[in-house]
Amino acid sequence: MKTIQSVDEMQALVNGVRANGKRIALVPTMGCLHEGHCSLIRMAKAKAEFLVVSLFVNPTQFAPNEDFDCYPRQLQDDLLQCESLGVDAVFNPSVEELYPRGYSTYVTEEVVSAGLCGVSRPAHFRGVTTVCLKLFNIVQPQLAIFGQKDAQQAAVLKKMVRDLNLQLEMEIAPTLRDADGLAMSSRNKHLSASQRGDALAINRALGIGKTMVEQGVRNVDRVVAEITHHLAQHRRVRVIYVQIVDRDTMEPAREIVPGRHLVAIAAWVDEVRLIDNILL
Ligand code: PAF
Image (cartoon, rainbow, N blue to C red; front, top):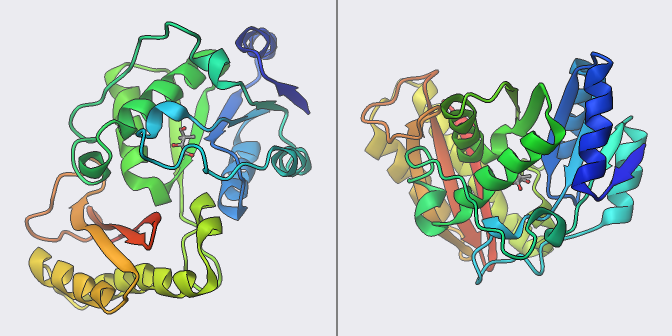
């Protein structure tokens, strides 16, 4: 497995791979790999002949008051994990390599990114689309895989790929959960045992919503109220949003259509910000 920090080196490598007619897959990550990432990497491995994983904690998607500095990092473990999963190349550039002094170009998707997390994290998706477009340009993959846990991110990136005519297939892999139901996330590392106990309310609340819809409820306000009520029972949980939205456009639902909508939750569990969603 190659470990590459330089853009030039990465581009030279993939140019060679493409010249040999091999299909390249990219799994972009911010490192601190967990089983959720591993499932994306395995999926990519099965669908391409050359697999690149990027490990880059992207500063442009964090606001100045957010957790960029304390975002968990564990490069050595990540490299071992990638090696064991048969990754061909890891791209882990420095911040200066991707954003050299004087860097001034950003990509903004303006509709899908506007609601949900776009409200409380206004510059977040601009950072995500910018870094992903850069990674797509550097690695030139035919396939990129993202996780459904970040449903809005996936929808925003799909829209960018469509709007900018990128020749790239995007796959969205299902959310992986720990045995207790908590959606896997690098930020779970910051939860104490008792905070984790409260964080489980998020998954349970999504389950309550899903059951209501399975029982025939189509009224958005009723489902949102029930979910919000469940979350409110937990002292450490502060809801940022509970919304039922279209899974592609992220537009708020007027009436629930199973197969079309999802419930998305963002909440603070003390100082840890978690998101999760369930397809209806
Ligand atoms: O989901 C993530 O880990 C990040 O937002 C991504 C897609 C790697 C871009 O930095």
